[in-house]
Image 1 (spheres, rainbow, N blue to C red):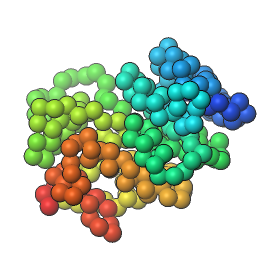
Image 2 (cartoon, rainbow, N blue to C red):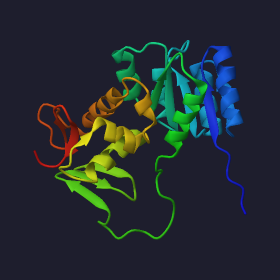
Image 3 (spheres, rainbow, N blue to C red):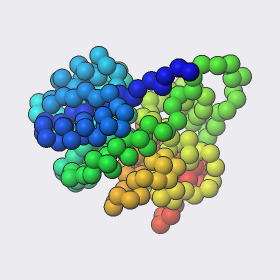
Image 4 (cartoon, rainbow, N blue to C red):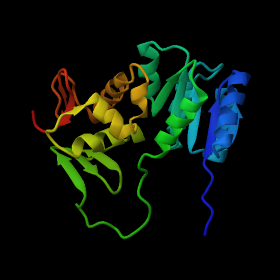
Length: 240
């Protein structure tokens, strides 16, 4: 039987004591871990080692975590979990808007951090090789919006839309049952596997990702074509 490939993590933070703790917990959980204390080193290591997940501090010296995440997304599809000591909405909106998949606010439990990483890694990835699907199969169409499930591609008209895994998973969940309203908690359960529900305020995480998804789809929240807000309940897709 072939051995299971070891998962790899890159931990990026300028606090040595925090890095040692996180590295220790991830190593004990079976990860191969590399560390960096600044953004330049982190980007070089990410190109070299192609980690499965990057634990990235927002407040790095030099290139901050937002810019590191932005640059990561130009060459890597790894999961990104952002660490922040500044829980204000602006930082979270900007940080998650450049492609982070989740966040944890300091101080945090290392066990919770590992659990959140494991949740990210359980999300569906792009399907592997196999028999090609017939043209037009497994597609969901909402006007000009076409969601190609096997390819995990999204187009609006002729434009290919670049989504993060989290944004794609949200869109796939919402489009699975057109006109059915999903509550924020249902979306957390579907996309984040329910673990985020234990963290106060995490339902707002859904709003942040929905906002960025709409921006990428060119969907005006005041007059949406694709993702509709149902006040006091949640979100749905389909005609208004």
